[in-house]
Amino acid sequence: MSPHTHPTVTPDALDVDVTADVEALYEDGITARKGAFTPEWADRLREDIETAFEEARSRPGGAVGRGPHRYYVEIHPEQLRGFVDLVDHPWVRSLCTAVLGPDYRIVEVGFDVPFEGAVNQPWHRDFPMPEETRAERRLTSLAFNVTAVDTEEDMGPFEIALGTQWDDSPEFGHGMFPPRSHYPRYEERAVRKYPRRGDISARSALTIHRGTRNHSAKSRPVLVLGVDGPEATNGERHDAAVTRAYWESLPERIRRHLDCEIVDVLRPITQKHTIEGLVMGDA
Image 1 (cartoon, rainbow, N blue to C red):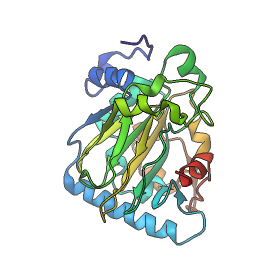
Image 2: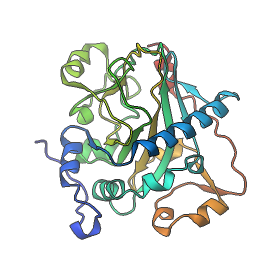
Image 3: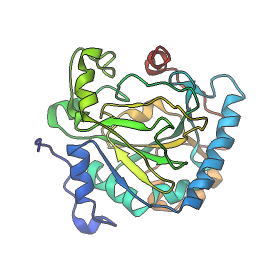
Image 4: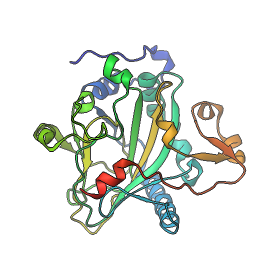
């Protein structure tokens, strides 16, 4: 196993034992909790995603392309009826605390939707490697994914190259896109994931991954929850906000981790057109 360091957290500070999950994150770059929620909970999630997507598509900058027929939309927490259920789930809380420490911050809520005709994305990571990871082999953020559908082989499943969260090369385009000469390594380590409604996965967004070609006529919406440790800066790229009334309705143990603006009226989020969106469009 590769040497690594992560926060020392006493077991009594956690709601559930996530020792094996932390090891999987450091070894493979991904772990999962099967059946964390009921299929009915996931069906409500899909309804909320579809409502938010329709709203986002109705205005300029509401949805950003991540390649042909593939979109990403960032949303506000209160657009999801299940937001509190998700961030307060004992496994989510425990994993965030164990990997990132007790002062972790929830910085992103959004979703990806690949539709019929979506193609293989280039292999990529979601942002350049932070110096703490490079120098100390320490993960400073987590990405949780929650599927809103039962994933089938023809729906363009998520593909991840296990153990590649530590890969580092000056050849990576924008620090995120490995050159095609590296692809055989990722294809050799690639695993496709077929989550069911109610499952949650957690990964380092540095682990090299891609969405694959959607051969079906169905969409495959997936919720994304981004969580930073104290030194991570991913929150600077996101614009989540909550209304004052919603903030006051939240338990204190959620408020202390929710890193977003408190406003009187929510404004629709204009997606940031990152270099990722531009490169994905050429895939």
